[in-house]
Length: 603
Image 1 (cartoon, helix red, strand yellow):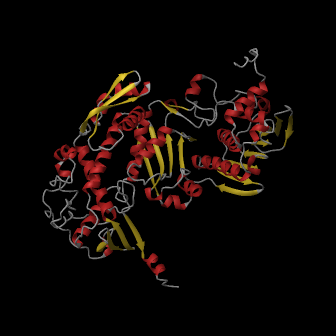
Image 2: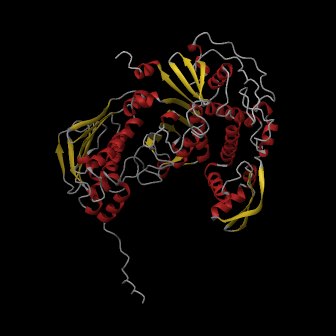
Image 3: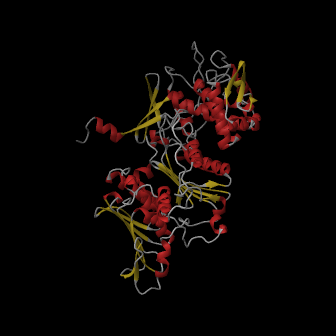
């Protein structure tokens, strides 16, 4: 039996208070949202010092004080009205907005869900004025030039919203993080945060480098690298954490666009791509990125909270960020820049194994076909200088180092378990995973050779006896048609069968066990997001990583001391040599202090 239709309700205009409460649901999520909006206003007013006071995580009270320009008494009632602002006056100004706030919604939204009082004094006033947003009463008050905004009993007018708040400790942590983001973006401004009458955090005005150290700690600075890069209309700067300092959570990832903290999927993807083949598993990098761009090249009016942006040329921004961060991460801790330039490394002495083994003359001899998949033949033929000599033992050994400290990775002394190389350097003992280290060396050589061969060289493809057919979205079909040539270069022959079906007739020869439909979907998604050139490069790198893994020296291969030293010298001369292609560390330092502690020396 059908349920009766509900009685029709007439269309009506909503009351102003309800409209404001609906708008507040978009802007004000929790106390941290209020803190963010109020600190934005303080910075737009030219404040040089901002103090935030919270009671019970901001649920009971939030007070933000600043020493900015202040608000004239006549404009205070306007400040709490919806869509009233001093920051923009025309569409042209909206398209080039350079202030933190501009929508004119924050104070009105806060006033609709909490008790709001503003006390402000501008430079020309004899005294301050105090406005009660609920009653509209304006009265004289005592205050220096600047503004104080008091927000009490958040969500008292909407009890259902208040039930969704977490514990005071959790809400305070979110509010503190909101101030932390502003502190990173504006090192020229002093910030102080008080909670329940106690000083919780304080950052004095400082240089950008000092502010990053003050906010994120010396540990982050010590395990990260500073970088700066101009890329056309973009200026990039910041610090990126080293791969070995990656975290289990993405809680130390800060991106600022023109001083505004944002969460942008495009930039996040670019940063993650820069860490390709350097992070293990699901580890998350830590970074602080400052991106400056002309205001008319970025749209900040995308989300009510202003935490999202849209770039006019998104792909150019993606590539600029990826390259800048990748270049910053390229030098390894084992870099030979701090040591004398090495002579050409020696090759492994000839042996007669039953299975194919490469030389360490680097990266490998590809003459043994039984261990090298046939699909790689084209790559070997195209870049013979990358795959090493056809006969080992052709290169001279470097002169032996007189002292262990002459080289960053020291002098080889032994091999353990057929897997690890032990070396002595100025700091103590170095332990090297020889397969992981050699794998990175081979990989970087192959990448360089492939780049020299040109970006248009197609990947080997394997035709499918039975095409794989799968249901696709209209966007996937459109991308497959537009990027047919790119897909073919990746070894994927994809053709639309209908408006909602795709057929795949070949796959990359180096991926015989891949789920063809899932692989195609992933490639189409990447093509739509970051463009053809990056997708082709990443697919090529994946193939070369597989080749490098097969081409690296295997466990239980006995090496001479000269061969071990050759490996160490190659590591020092290779970019990203601190991790293998899968993100595992290639070497560890055990200092003399660590060894002393093991044997209780000095106790």
